Image 1 (tube, rainbow, N blue to C red):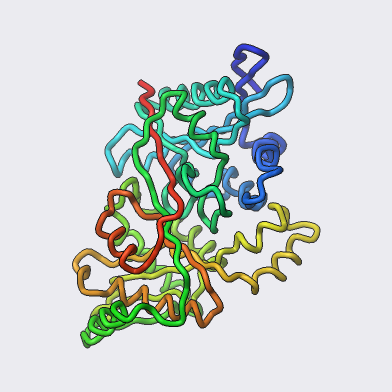
Image 2: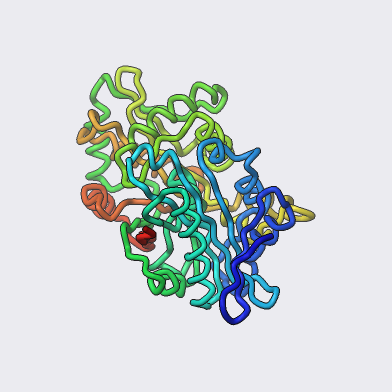
Length: 382
């Protein structure tokens, strides 16, 4: 391994993705950071190994990733990835590269060294701005730095970090570019009456219908979900339509996380126009196994999965020509009432752009509470 030696015995060392030992050491460093944090949920090691395997993860079909670790006196004190997301560059026509998987001791020198190496790697690719944190893309992966709401564990698919990370990032020159919000709500047997009225009025349209997800016919269902997902979210900040390979990979995760009993598709004249997607918060089951399925993690996971009472709604979207008809409210009402029957009592809708004032107003009217804020940062690397 080559390295750049900094002062005070600090080295920034690139990780060879072909070297499983190096990759595992990169992954497992987060145990050092969160060992005493009661809210942290360890990601599954097998999932991380797949993310950093160019032969298995579809991101590598169009983009590149380079991990680095910060070493001091032979010990890892920080880590980061630099990634060139070519689909983002093409779709948004901006020379932006990304950093992600950032973990670091409260050590500004180590953080500075990591960001310097990651920035240099991106600049060598012809990129002019470094943005993050992002775990590859905004499609299904955790993004953003948690900056408010540290008093509870993250739900499935959302990021978590110590409060001091914001200081490490801003002190090296990053500026806020966008915030994302997570809204919390209680799952009740019935939605508020005014929203049920809106939903009932929308459902009087004979051309509009709602249905659950057909898990038995998953292949064609995934095609429907892909169209709605890409179209409904295509104008979101930073969004990039998924490739077929990425959506197929995402669909595999959907099969495990999505609750088909609390996921609904809205159709207009038989055409899918809206989607309310709900996940079981598997983090409740994952927390006790600390990222390890073996030797007893699978047993603990199976025992815990039926006790999950928290859900996450990552997608509540309607295609633009069909908005302002109450379809989104109808999807919410059906999800809420189905979720209560399924045993959910708490839920999160995330994430919502801070600039999406209309959606924020709707969620506040629905009685949801903004309880976590995530932030993306930019730094000029020219």
